[in-house]
Image: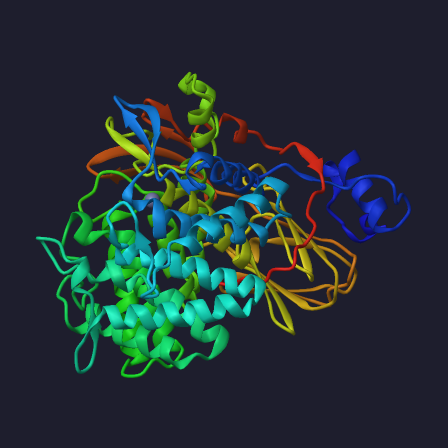
Length: 559
Ligand SMILES: [Zn+2]
């Protein structure tokens, strides 16, 4: 039994660990294994899936409701909108497929996936673009981008040749709709009175590059590279310093950060006429600029330059850009991702809808599980007359998916634990006790070396490790390296989490946060009308336990 090899199990030797050990040793096959009941990204995911299912209108061929109107700080009604089409239906299809990478889909989700796929398919017109029946013209280029994300995700999941053809035709149609210049292309359609808004179309770059990565379809890479050169060299919104010079829609941080993720991915894939080193530098400066001006350490990211509220999509775009920069060697950005996911991303979800005292069951179902589009650090529904937008349900699911998929990274030699949240891959299960206890349990299923990232507030030499006899531990800069791992024999890491009270200035207001490690336990002042960071239950020194519920799922989609 593994307890023999763990020298400091001591006071934690509860029934929970005893049973877990017994099962590993094969003594009590029937006994359940227990795990700490800490942050499990599948919980918010499941609620979000339900919300997607409930935000499709059976009376309208399952057209999504993009919006829930908020009037005087209260959700009032589900509303159809011009963003229902390529954007919301694309996002819903993508979200339901991303969710499959984390949980077995419930039957309603499988049915909803088929319905929304049909709805999106029905929107393509003879030109190969998504048509917007409400506007009676081709859909907005940003919405075309969301549809492209959906189709590329759908193709990667199912490898259906007809979807592949549809994506090829779609990219060809987008290329035809663009204005072609000698060294770039651009879309006059996205301009507003205040600016050319290249980011609203350049949001298409990332899915086009992903399609190239999956298929080698060269026109997709050419299209992406020529589109990349528009915001980089033929528009002055984003300065070489990384500063974004326009406010509002023209400075929409969700689209700008996804644009730079796409451009970076495009130059990495060898997109023609892009200097990878230069692109990487510019993308890094954009991230640093957004982080230093419009982001709080707990993951509140302003909707746009100058905005006072946070749209969930933008948190996810920051996570995505951080992940692309991590691939360039900036592993320090794991710290940001860990803090964003543990805090504002999770808090931005409407979970306890009862407190809104609504009566319309369709409205209640449409809100529960959605993610806010106008959040203050301490409250949702921060803008009295606004809406809860369908895009952000996708934004929340994308964020959960990106965190979940990247929490553990495996190569043939090494299993790398990047985020200290509970997660599982074929090689390793991570059971995290954070923030209750500074403890992370590893359950390896093979003998690959393991590297566990240590957060920026923790000296890796102060991590106490216990595991099988012969286990070799090396403290590295920002990580602990473990060799002589034995399959089936758990390893326990223990460390102190520092607690601190910190002040954060967000959108001109000061907030007082009590941090424990990377988790905010309390945020003051309390907000209204939908206060968040209500986290008294995290203020204990031991988590509750729950039966193990981590079956690895074959992940077919990668972003
Ligand atoms: Zn949104």
